[in-house]
Every structure is written in C-alpha cells, then in structure tokens.
Amino acid sequence: MENARSAQMFTVLEGLAIRFKTLDDGRRQIINFVMPGDFIGLQAAVADEMGHSVEAVTDMTLCVFERAELFSIFQNHPSRAYDITWLGATEEHFLGEALTSIGQRSAIERIAWGLLNIWMRAIQLDLLQDGELLFPFRQQDLADTLGLSLVHTNKTLAKLRERGLLSWSSNRLALHDVPALEKLAVVSIEDFKRHRPLM
Amino acid sequence: MENARSAQMFTVLEGLAIRFKTLDDGRRQIINFVMPGDFIGLQAAVADEMGHSVEAVTDMTLCVFERAELFSIFQNHPSRAYDITWLGATEEHFLGEALTSIGQRSAIERIAWGLLNIWMRAIQLDLLQDGELLFPFRQQDLADTLGLSLVHTNKTLAKLRERGLLSWSSNRLALHDVPALEKLAVVSIEDFKRHRPLM
DNA sequence: CGACGAGTTGAACTGTTTCAAGTAGTGTGG
DNA sequence: CCACACTACTTGAAACAGTTCAACTCGTCG
Image 1 (tube, rainbow over the protein chains, first blue to last red):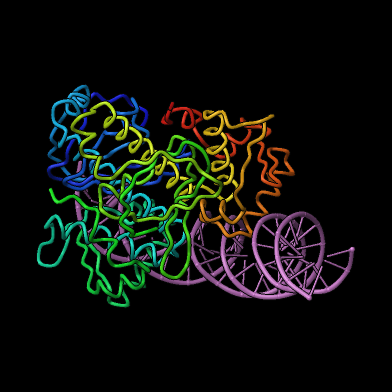
Image 2 (cartoon, rainbow over the protein chains, first blue to last red):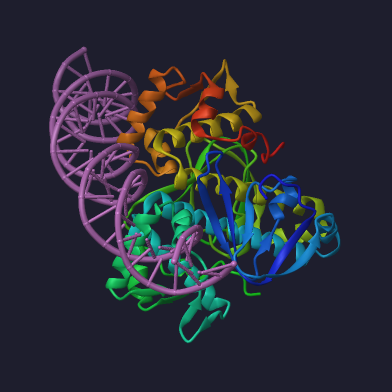
C-alpha cells in the first residue's frame, strides 16, 4: 500500500501485478504492469515509504528480501548491488518513455504503444503461447495506464481490431501486425529492444 | 544526446537544464528539470545509451565521472553506490508522480502541480531570493513538461495569476499561495517533502 | 432467477488544440 | 539611431479529440 512502511522487497518470479498511485479523489494512475523479473520495493527501501501501491492480478510467486538486508548487499555483493541499480535505471528509462507517450501521443498511438510494450516484454520473457498472451487485465486498467477514459479506450481498441492489427478478448491478447503498430505508435523500433532485464 | 554513447556521468553543482525525449516527428516531452544535486547519465552508464537528451538552460558547473568508474564505485565505495541508487530511486519516484499528473490531472491541476514541484525543490536547495526564483524557462518548456499546448498553458497560467496564486514574468517565478495551489493540484501535501536529496 | 462486473455503442458535451493575428522586448546591421 | 528580424508571450475564435452520460448486451456466479 501507498505510504506503508514495508519491511520487505520482492523479486517477481511468476505472475502479474499492477503498480499504481491514487489521488485523494479516487483517480488512479497505473505506473506499470509488473511482470516476472521485476523488483518491487526499492523505492520503499530507500525512501522509507512506498509512494504507490502494488496489487496482484494473478497468483504470484515472489522471492522475498528483508529490507534491512539491502545495505549489506551493497557492502558484500557489489555486483548484485549493481544489478539492482541496473533494474532501477531500466525502470526509470521506461517511465520516461511512458511519460512521453501520455504527454505527447494521441489515444490510438498510446494504445498501440502500450500494448506493444507489453507484447515485447512478454516475448522476452517467453510468455506467449500459440502467438497469444494470457492477459488478465481489464480495459479499465489499460485506460488508467494511458490516461484515457474507459469509453474512449474501448472505442479506440475497436478501431485497432477492425484494422486487423490486434485481437483481445477473454483474457487473450494477440498483436497481428507489430510493424504497423510500431509505425502507428511513432516509436523508434529500437526503443523496445533495449533496456529490459535478461534474467 | 539521445542514443549517444556518453563516456561520462555528471553531478550537477550549479545551473539548470532540461532532460527530454523527442519523437521522430518532432514532438518533445520534457522528462524533468535538472537542478543542482541531480545525477545525470546513470541510465546511459547502465544501458550503454542515453534514451533521452539533456540541454543546459543556464551556464552549469558539473562534477564529471568516467562511466568506466561506475562499477569500481560499487566495488570500493558501497555507501557511495548506495547513494547513487538512492538518487535513481528518488528520480523513479518522481517520474511516477509526473505520470500521475499528466495522466489524471486537468490542465490547471497539472500546472499547479508542476510549479509547486519546482518551487519545493528550489526551497530545499535554497534557491529563492526575496521569495522569488530565477526561472529561465519558457512557457513552451512547461507545456512540453505537462503535455499541454503552449496556448492552453498560457491561458491557464493567466487564470492562476488572476487568482493571485502566483506570478511569473521576465524569468522570475513566485508562488504566493502554496496551500491553495496544493489543494488545486490535489496533492497529498507530504508528496513534496519526501524523496528529495539532502546533498 | 437476479445481481454483478466487464464490455459495447450512441449522443451530447467540453476541455484542449489548432489557427490566426497582434504586442512587446531584444539584438543586429546599415 | 532607426529599421529589421526574431523570439516569447498574449488573445480570440473555430475545430476537434476525448470525456461523460446513459442504456444495453453478455457471461458468470450464487
């Protein structure tokens, strides 16, 4: 929970979650989708509080670290410490991209960008089955990720479906034309290939 | 420059800069304003490339580190390494806040939030003179930070000025009613006080 | 069967963008 | 020292992308 003091940090081994922040009046911004390989709780460890909430969307398997251990990792395992920093910097890079999307891209571009992002990560993590991804999120979640209303997200998804670029129903997502989506999203294609854990 | 391989990292001692990303068609998103105490180039050091550009807005004084040194800092100065990670995590936290602003807040809320943010940082860094901040940015820069058009930014600033909440002209910024702006921006007041370097 | 959550669709509305024109300040060159 | 070019800021009006409201479908669960 946001503002909680958590005594643990976690590495995600399996499962999916969302990391989000809510405003006092209830508006919710999803910061990112948490996938295997992600490290949760560094901010809390380093800043004493969370600043956002994390919510599991599926069952998850986590590797738990005591927060108190963090500094001793820096003392005794410099290359692990370096990895942690690397993960943090990677995340920071991603957030810069996300900021650019929400700040500059139109609705259709954002959705293309957002789904591409998830898609490319899923590929790296070898999460596809028969060219499909098990994707247990709601349209509302995507809307809150991209700063769009639910209704508009729905209508924009419909357009992408009509164009044959993707399909998404009953928790199964498939992108059918990645190059077209890349063009639509105005991404330098390289942006997705770098900056992600190999774990 | 974005995508450049930089051999150095920098700590900002004096001066102001912007960190931004541009899309292929020219749209620009400012990721954040770079102020004294910030550490530039960690992403590049860790990921081999920048992913964004940095541009000085005033003359600057920097402390230069060779990128190659980074890993040896982790080996020989664990508490320095920890500090670097702390700075990264702090930045990551800020980007989450920014994402929430751009994704969820209206124009007037965003502007209140953005200027408050800068203001609180300036106070922490003791950059105010006679209750004013030397603020050498253009309205276009603020617009590109918050994902708004220049025109709308201008008109919204005018409203805040009319309400007597702030003044900003000829490079001098002053917030006259911080509590009112906090309320307007829908921030948990605490959000500004945590998570910033003490350096 | 009824209740509920998620998705879908149409229509009205509005916040924000875009277009366009004009002012003010600053530096440059003739 | 004036004319000019140039950049930042300002303002009004028209256009539009995206939001909000409302109603309906479909599948699931108890």
